[in-house]
Amino acid sequence: MRLLLIRHGQTPSNVRGALDTARPGPGLTDLGCEQARAVPEALTGEEIAGLYVSPLLRTQQTAAPLASARGLTAEVTEGLEEIAAGDHEMSRDHEAIAAYQENLVRWAEGDLDHAIAGGEDGRTFFGRYDAALRTIAAQHPEEATVAVVSHGAAIRIYATVAAGLDLETLDDQPLYNTGLVVLAGHPDHGWELSSWVNDPVGGAHLRGDTRHDVTADDTTDAVQDAADDA
Image (cartoon, rainbow, N blue to C red; front, side, top):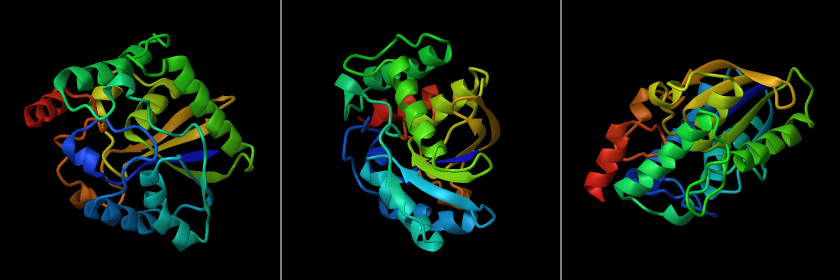
């Protein structure tokens, strides 16, 4: 299976630098809608057999133009949601953001028992994300290509660990709104990285201001910028 993992379009919380992970979550900004509208053309060459989204509103709004263009139904799938911020939900301060992003590093290093206060540990996250992808895979032949609209931190850590990428991937490979990670394989047999597109699939001109987008990457600049604006 080819898995097109697409991050949702920009939200107000991405602009503000808030750790916004709870349901139903915000909708898209005007730029986020523009990013979403660019997805169908960007994926023209892909034969997409199915389209899946998380239970959060922003993924469903991002998928809508692609669903319309391809005559697909965006199927809401439990387990594809963002990594829970726990007690730091909606926080914008340096301490909260650093704790959330350090959590990803701990998981990438193999410490899957680690969790931020009130959040999920790595075993829970990978278990529910794998289960969602296993449910999706069961509906398609092995050679199928499916699109999944999910979330920045979730896609980045899942791809990094599942495909056995270097820990430095979390620093070197941001995933801006409507960025794309392509994995080949199966949740039961493992994944290989096919490509990682940092910028919006519709083009870098759609990136917008990402200084406060704390789930796009885990660089210290993103943490500091968010803290300075809090």
